[in-house]
Image (cartoon, rainbow, N blue to C red; front, side):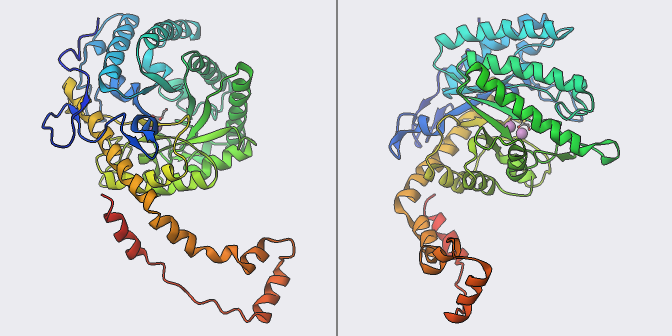
Length: 437
Ligand code: XLS
Ligand code: NI
Ligand code: NI
C-alpha cells in the first residue's frame, strides 16, 4: 500500500488567482491550444530516476531524502514499494507519461540472469499497474553507465564483453518498453567517450558505437517495436570527451551508421547549454535536419558548469524552443520528460509536487504565448521576407542544373550584381518577443 504521498490529493487546475500551492495556475490539461488539448501538446513525463531513485547525494555528502523505499531491506521488496509510490505520484501529479531506466526500477543481482529476473519481476508488476492507471510510458532506457563494469564506456569499451553486457541490457529493456506500450526507446551514451587519448583507439570506439546503433535498429524491426529510437546528446560529464557531444555530433554518428531515417534525437536543455549552444539552437538544428524526436526538459545554472538538472522556472527560456517545436507540428510520439531533480534540501513529499507543478505551469505559459506568436505570424513572415530572393531568378538558378561556379560568376558581371547589405534587425525582433509573455 502506498502511503508516502497520502496527505496529497490529485493536483487540479485552479487558475492564477488561486493561492493553493498544490494546484496548477496555467496548466489546464483539457484547454485547447492550437487545435489540441494542452496535455496532448506537452505530453509531460515524470522521470523515475531523479524523482524516485536519486537519494540527494552530492560529491560532499550522502543521501538527504531518506524516503521509505530507500531504507535498508530486501531490495526486491523495496523496488516493489517504490513502484507503488511512483504510480501513486503519477496519478496525483497527472503527467500523462513517465520514463525509466532498467536500473531505476529493479536492483542488480549477482549475475546477469538474476538481474534479468529482478527486472522482469518489476516489469510484470508495472504492466499490471499500467492497466489500472491513466499514465503511459513515454520511453524506457538502459543504464549502462553507473556500474563499475562500464567505467571505460559501454559500447565503446575496449573489452567486447562489456559491449555484449550492454547489448543484453538494451535487448531486455527494449522488449520491456515495447510490452509496456512505450512510445520511444532512448539511448543516452553515458560514458561513450574517453578521458585520455593516451589509452584510446578512437576509430575503433566510434565504429563500435555505430555498430551498436545498427544492432538496436535491427532489433527494433525484429521485434516489431513501433516506437521511435532516440539518441540523447550530451557534451561532457561523465566523460571528458563524448562522441555524442551535441545534435550535430549525434547526427554525424547516426549518418556514419546509415540510420538517418531510423534514429531521432532526444534533446535536453541542460545538455544543450553545457555544449556551448542554447536549447533553442539544438532544437532548431534537429528540426532543420528532420531529427527532432523528444525533449528532456530541465535547466542548468548560469553560475555552475555542470548538469544541475533543475526544473524549468522561466517561461521566456522556453518560448523560442517551443515556438520552433510547435510551429513545426509539435510532438507525435515524443514529449516533454522532466529530466529534473529537486534540490537536496527539498526533503518533503510536497517538494516533489511543487517542482513538477512549477515545471508544468512554466511550460503551459510558454505554450499559451507560442499560440499567439504562431497565429500572429510576425516572426514567420519576417523570415520568409528575409529569404524571399531565394525564390526568385538568381536563387533558383543557383540550385538549377545550369548553375555552376562559372555560370554563376558570369551573372555577377552580366547582370552587374552588387549586393546591398540589409539590417538583421535583431533588437527589433527581440522586442517582439516581449509582447507575448
Ligand atoms: C543524463 C541524461 C540521462 C538520460 C537517460 O545526463 O540526461 O538522464 O536522459 O539516460
Ligand atoms: Ni536526459
Ligand atoms: Ni542530463
